[in-house]
Length: 420
Image (tube, rainbow, N blue to C red; front, side):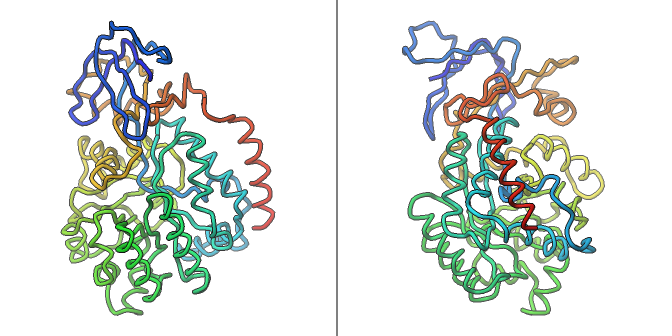
């Protein structure tokens, strides 16, 4: 158990503030109890003084890419990409084809560490390594477990490297489901043929899962679908059964027409917005019109800082979206609602972040959203509790040797870059 003493609790849903002690149970779905603790505590209880600090629910990432972790500073591609298809071909597909399990493990460890240091205790990841498919998901899961960050994983099934590798992706997914919950991952409509799409939906039905897929990230996804299948992307996914699952996640959704937006908004599927990635790839800006309220935020592998992503969604949304202070915070927190409504474990109330936010102005329930967008940053994260375990104390990771992992990641990054 952990006892957080003398802190100011901010309820993540009601934004109610109260001075309290918090007793935190350990476990995937452990409890938290609010009290002015006076009774004797169990002998193994860890007490942390939170005087002058704020305590709230930790953060979660709705769409990440572990496989991009070793890309920072990598050599320039052989050809300067002129459009999104070429970005994929010369940068990301070139990188993911070079990955092996050692590189994947390093990628997962450094991603999980970055998440923890940014107050993120749960990650929904979308992985690709077409020449290291078998065992890739379990490799990522074990690395995240080692750091102490919760996860919901999928393998990015695609026909782009051939039907045999698509089959390996389906098999890896099914094998992973025999031990852990997850999602059935697909790259995007333009790299997934009808037979692979059908098999993926059948697997999701058989395992009571959902589909995690990139949707209309670039206009070429729509153009390909119309030319090849005589339907727009959402119409194709609807006909295949993707939108029937409340666990399905549709990433990006930039280039949907009004009819498609209505289909998404009327379905139980969730949308995940990745504003900074979209701007980096020059593919467009997210607009929530017609998509409903089931919108959450992700980083798309750009980084692991969800507070930063929320600010990007808000600022870019001034010109391209209907989004306000409260709406930004709702999207930021919707990942918890997605996980809870679909009964995924590991993101319970005993996932907490302690913020040392010494604001020069008053912070109250009434003005919290203003501080959330213009004041609170990841540098204010001092302690992180994941599933009742203290994994970050005073900004230092407790669960793993950060220096040793970074030393190994340098080795793996150099190996990877030599193959690009």
